[in-house]
Image (cartoon, rainbow, N blue to C red; front, side, top):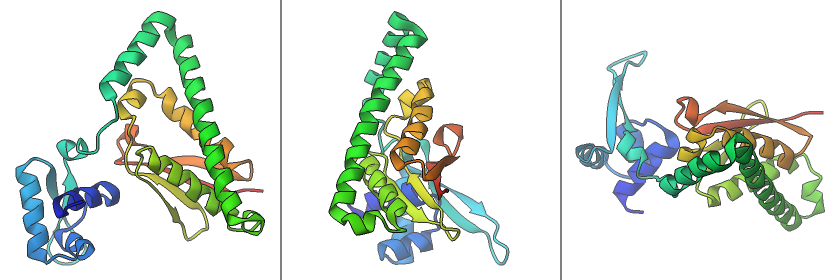
Length: 219
């Protein structure tokens, strides 16, 4: 990616940032980062908000605009919406439920295969260790990332894990039929196993800038 694309990518994955922070991340001068942001602003891709800090002057936080988010496209959105409309028209909500269930089964099988391969690569000792859940969540994140969700994981101070999805490549479908989102949460729980609990902490469709799942070991 070129520098302009990297600026948009960092704002997408890390949320609002100051020009100074972007300069550090991109190894640019402060002036260079500001020029990149101003250029993106002229194109309507970024905006800013001056946020009052506890001490000193307000800091300017740059963020993606709607046009900036659109640079990370919803895959085949128009076609997907047409198909959802047609399924509803022809088969009703029962048909939609069957469609979601079929997608759920296919996704679950693919994720189970990805996690099984990751465990095979790690070996039986790692699969049985205390890091097994973290390895499984990382494998799931890699599978989701390959699907366009810009997924990553973080370990929290309390030992819980975050599965973070910075983008939703099926946002149009999920907005039209939120059963897709409910289905994903259930799939994650089954794939990761009964030894953990999966909860959604942030939801793009509820106004958050991303989807975040908190995963805790139980039992």
